[in-house]
Length: 86
Image (cartoon, rainbow, N blue to C red; front, side):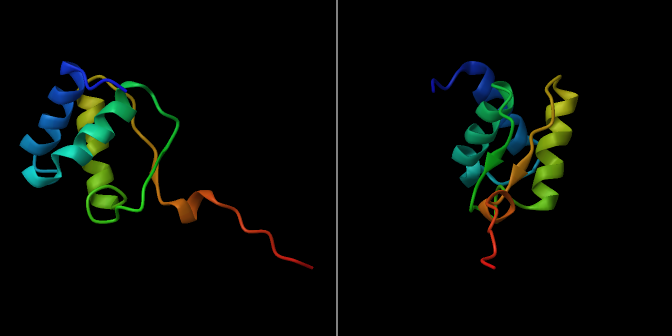
């Protein structure tokens, strides 16, 4: 996927509004691209910078104020169903 100026601007806004720190810019680009491309869900093991309820609220607040939809962000554990053996 090509990193566009639109994605860079949205990622920078996440940083500027203190959702995460500057060292998480790559994570912000990932979230911005998923947002811009209207991904159904973003799945990540990164609980510090991505799959964190406070950060998710921050990303989605910025998304809405920027004219984008909210992004569903979950951990793999939330997505994978385990069938019990009977």
